[in-house]
Length: 221
Ligand SMILES: Nc1ncnc2c1ncn2[C@@H]1O[C@H](COP(=O)(O)OP(=O)(O)OP(=O)(O)O)[C@@H](O)[C@H]1O
Ligand SMILES: [Mg+2]
Image (cartoon, rainbow, N blue to C red; front, side, top):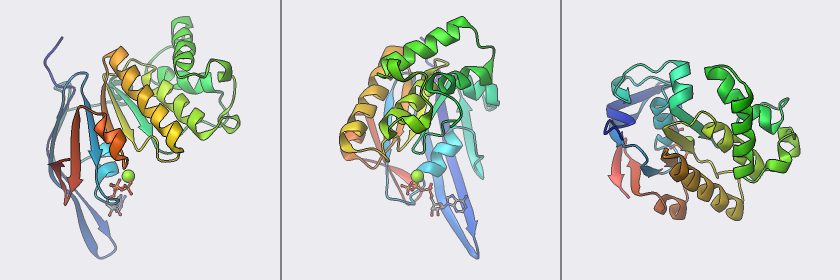
């Protein structure tokens, strides 16, 4: 296996202008994520966790600092779609599409969708316990089921890293625990690394490395 880190962030700075106020959210964040490892990030509301994940996913740019994904500084949408699986608190499923089509969207974004992709989408839905729900649209699924569809979609392209921003924030305790079990076990089976942003100390503790974001930088949790 390559020793190249999946993700390497160096001295990330990010500020926002909010009216007259200039908020320095990230003040020199460093993070290296190796292949297959799990890292949790906790921190108070407003500490910059989502801001950081947006930078790590290449969806937003830092004011300064460096990002490398498998050693490369550029991340096109197609490359992002292959390398990263993104899971958000708000699921972002397409309401008109059934569960299977939502999972297949990830594959559509990076290439052709044929029978192997359809088979993988069905297999992932089976693994997240939704084999019987593949033809249901999101409105007919519970919150926990929608999040499981979002996880299947994040795994569709066999990413090297999953970035999950409070994936259990909208769920009851039992469903939340089940989602974390899924993320960790699927990640292990697929050799995929995980960066998990969470407010839940027990969920954070299940990751091999635990970080705490405070005053714009990381502290060991
Ligand atoms: N687009 C934006 N424009 C201006 N300010 C922003 C923007 N996005 C975030 N902020 C501010 O940056 C700070 C960090 O926000 P962020 O969403 O990263 O926090 P968080 O740690 O994810 O919080 P939570 O736990 O509530 O999700 C907050 O003070 C927020 O108000
Ligand atoms: Mg947030």
